[in-house]
Image 1 (cartoon, rainbow, N blue to C red):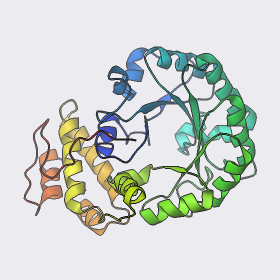
Image 2: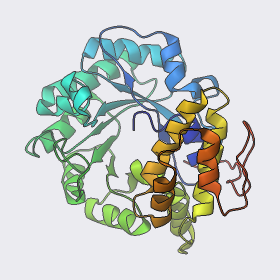
Image 3: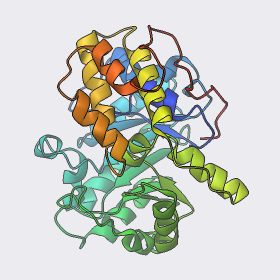
Length: 331
């Protein structure tokens, strides 16, 4: 979720009870111990207890392939206050893979184990080390071996995206394969991939046998999906689908938070990027995206998002009418 799930997005997505924890965008590790400012840029929550404003714990994610460099940067993160280190072996991006990061390590389970073990040995038992993988690089032949390698290296939890790297994000997600992995290793397994609705959530849990799931693109497409899942689990009642007014309010506040520190042209691009994710399975978001995709000024973009809702574009720091109230989340 590079370039998408920043601290402001984590704040907005966790304001209502839904998530149990969140993960940062990855910190790219090459061959050097990175300065504190890099970690603070990716995870400003390090200065506020490593939780979102609503109290949801945040894990700091590293991406790299050199065990020594990963270990040194895990130590740096721990010393800055990180409460958990997550290792990314799932990123399918060609540029990342070309530079020997993310899912590229899934071609050799020994490299996965070496990376996890180096980080685990560096931080000891002071903080947990978790990992995220896919079902393989080009095929699934090494899916079980890579999962076992992460566990043998010392990972305390494994998130599995239910596709190979070459499958990217193309449907379907093979949730039943996550079930094979869950039965094969002894650490908790979390299901991930193509969870866009309550029905997807339950199907993913049923086919994988996992107790927990991770939401990625689905949380951006429907920012209230996790709260609706939580409510359904707690009460058995299904809340109404997220309305455009609620989605627009979240985008408007996201803009307000970002524009306090970033140039408006960058904020405009970030809001469009989130709106692009909302298009999936939502006709109104698609219509709004087509209407505003060529607008390059932030005020015009916000007017297009809020048109017909009785909202005016918000100034920095203001909460748009109808935005979710801040609540202590159990994420």
